Length: 344
Image (cartoon, rainbow, N blue to C red; front, top):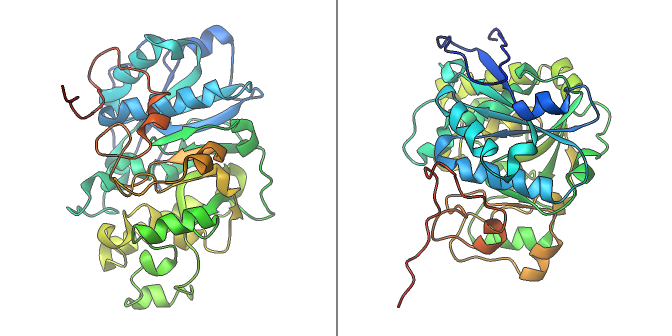
């Protein structure tokens, strides 16, 4: 495990050196003016912000704030080089009054745990593994929501936050065998809904787990976490163990599993998670440029997730209109939408 050093800044990021495995935090001006602390009655949402996907993060935030009257506090995790960009995106747009804290993540914590893989290198982005380290963030909450950055929330986030976790469960996820509409979409694009699609059952280490390969998998891009239970069960340490095991034994690959961040979660949380209402995680919108859900079904959904290679800020992609209504243009001009040229 790595050590945790925390610093707070209200106006600008200090110029400290990078140290392996350390977190830094930057408080927001909005937070200071509102007099809000992490102990107040807020809904804490953790989301990552990479420079190349910053517009996605801001669209997610905008959709959440636009669909709730609850007080939401955002923990935005990014790299040191993107702290200024993240803050400026917020302060120079309609999001300037939001409550937030920017947390800096040092990817050195992943040394010896993640192998380079060329099949989908974006899935090896260090920020994909932030979800493993929730208790080590600069937060002080018993419960948090974690969201990926390719998500739009159409429902009231307070409903997701209020889910009752079963005793002994550290998190709640949506299973891949929930809604018939979701299952049909998965089958139409050739995706897996079971552990067989994520773990290499030819390996003895996997067979020794005793997990039925036909058991339903889940997507860790949306979940509610009980931080106390997470700490009690040493979830982070368990996740790191399986990362290190894969580094040595190659028990899963990004080609097989659609990334290496999902399999450790599937192993550690097998039969130990509460199930979310499936309408709170309608996913796979980014797995095909052609396969679409019905518009009536999407209108009922509380949360949409463009997991997969076809992101709604790029092209081609499906249901881009549902995402774009929440998009806020980047005031710096660095992030821009990719759209087909109109034909005259």
